[in-house]
Every structure is written in C-alpha cells, then in structure tokens.
Amino acid sequence: MAIIGSYERHTDLGCEAVVFLDEESDACFQLQRDLPGSPRAGEYCITTGASAPVFAGVQAWRRVGADRFEFALVPQAARLFGDEVVSFALAADSDTDIDELAGHVERLLGMDRLP
Image 1 (spheres, rainbow, N blue to C red):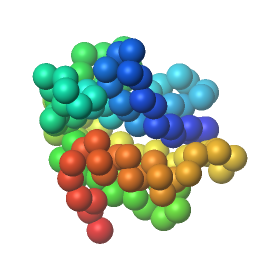
Image 2: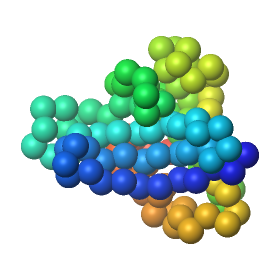
Image 3: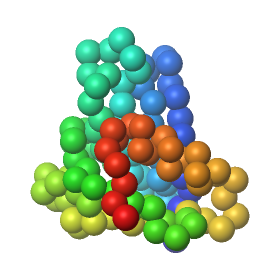
Image 4: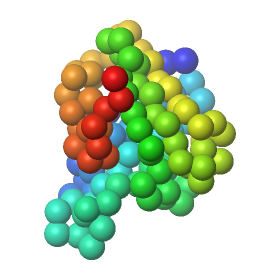
C-alpha cells in the first residue's frame, strides 16, 4: 500500500487534520480538531473522511521506526475501521516530514505517545 500522510489546515471549514490516505484504495484515516475559538476546539475526532466523526476515538498511539504510525482505537472507532489497532507505513517516496507529522498528531490528540 502507498500511504501518504499530510497535515491540513482548513480555515474555511474551521478545522485542522492529519490525514493518512491509501492512494490505491482511497481509504482514509483522519484525525481532526476544530480551530481555536470553535465550540469543540478542545476535542479531537477520527473519521474516514466520509463517516460520522468518533470523538476521543484513540486510546493510545505510537510511532514505530522511521515511517510507521500505530493507533489503538476505542471500541466504537474499532468497529468503524475494522480493527482495534490501525497502522500506517508512509510511502518511501513521500515528501512528508515525518517528524513534523508526528508533532501534529501528538498536538491534535493531546496525549503522549506509547513507547
């Protein structure tokens, strides 16, 4: 799978997101948070991009090696994504700064990483 990771800030939609997109299947995992000043700015949600959001859907996360992200999901989110743990290895030819992306994930989720 060729997974692309990106950080997006949409002032017109009032949110920011970290998006993991599988280019082959168009499957998507998004971490979203409203921008400051919005009613839900202190909360994050996860979504497929087309699904209803699941607020506080991640129990824990970690970065594995140089290019992989793993997320342990709460039961409601696990039903949405089909597994209790989802894992994404970014494409080797990705232009994404993985350290910067990890910083956005940590900030949006508001939780420490697993070792």
